[in-house]
Length: 377
Ligand SMILES: Cc1ncc(C[n+]2csc(CCOP(=O)(O)OP(=O)(O)O)c2C)c(N)n1
Image (cartoon, rainbow, N blue to C red; front, side, top):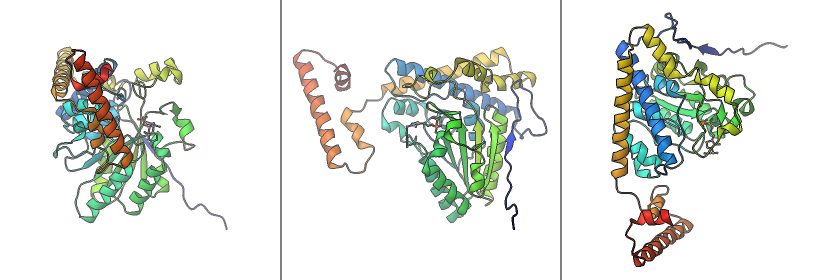
């Protein structure tokens, strides 16, 4: 006997196209005020991002992973997340942090290398940045299972990239989520590259969304540069999660316009033409076209939004940079509860080197801060 046991299909959702025209039948119920807020957070994310890149080039931030191009995937999705849901990001989700009302100065502080920036306020239901690719979906599923166990109505939401779907952790998380019907929403921002590896070399699957099928739940692919489609998919997935119907994987198909991080040069593995094509699909531009047609946009409004965003960013930078900087040896204080012998030794060594440099400068008659001296050295 031979028979078909399973057939599957993967839906693709686009509501707002590149020309700013929207499919009214599919449009989620968003007020004009909410749409404007979405636009404003997308602009704030971009202004933050541009400033962060400049600060990095001036040596005022460490390695930074830019968000440009992924604003609709981030803001569209997080707008559907409720205050009591918990978000588990990767390392590119600055827009998600901002829309969750994370104080901006903490983000600048963190990207300048100060772990105290990830001391997330209690009212911001978000976990710290996860640099380890693919680790955070497991944390999210654990949290979601606990929510279910405690009969709480909230959900867990986790963000990760296309590259993370090749990690074992991702598959373990998906499996647990399926088995336990965990109230968890997996948001994969498929920006088409994991550093220099294109998504076609990452997987033989036609979509990333279909990976959910193997674990017994739904996956949907959405236009990740369309904030309305991303919002609707996330809203539906969260409603499903909260009503006990289990997890969903959302693949937001988007593009990383910038380099992977400030240590990368994307020109080495991507054609300029491809980047130009995706620049035309810019999510902010698309929303702007829609708002213009809907009579919700003017040059004055555009300038005002930009000016306010720039003001907020400048204020946050000044605040972050006014905070007393860490001593170099303090970097050892934030990873382990207690240090291994090797790390203890390294910490003492840094302290000693730092002291020697300071002493040398003192005897040479220079009067700079300890951190400044180490940087000069
Ligand atoms: C476990 C692990 N392996 C390798 C790295 C190095 N690394 C940092 S980001 C990255 C690519 C991640 O790609 P993707 O998941 O698609 O996210 P994106 O950077 O595109 O947002 C790699 C390999 C890491 N941080 N963690």
